[in-house]
Image (cartoon, rainbow, N blue to C red):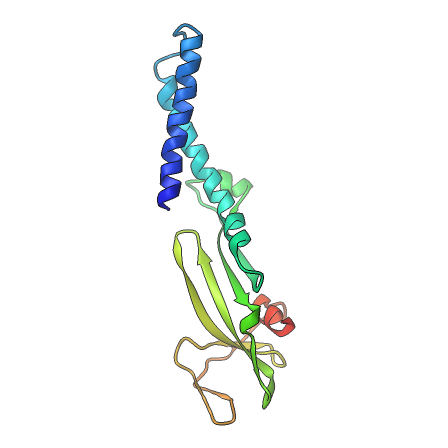
Length: 172
């Protein structure tokens, strides 16, 4: 975040500097407000560029074992251009290496689900997936395992047929 702030400030200086050089080359014919307006336009352009490139930069830095299962696009009234072209400001990924199975329960799997957000810290939630019943349960709430490996006190959620977390976990 700090580096993006520094980049935004430098973009403002660069755009203002370009206008000042143009003003010097034209013999001072540009209006006095041109440099501050150019600085503002440069800073806004840098901010928009950072927002739109965040997802690609973050995705490219992930290890190959993380499979992205869901993206959330952002639209906001105070950013009207996002209605035409929304940008991804958060996403979820599973760690395909972390998929664990139990030989007593071959249809159930445990996987680590990671959440990434533009201005949020990364978080992880272990998730149990039942491939046969198309259900899943978040294990962050203190679910316990019985001696046979079955989950106790887990809130199983019946998911739609195309649930990306279940599909990616069962295919891994």
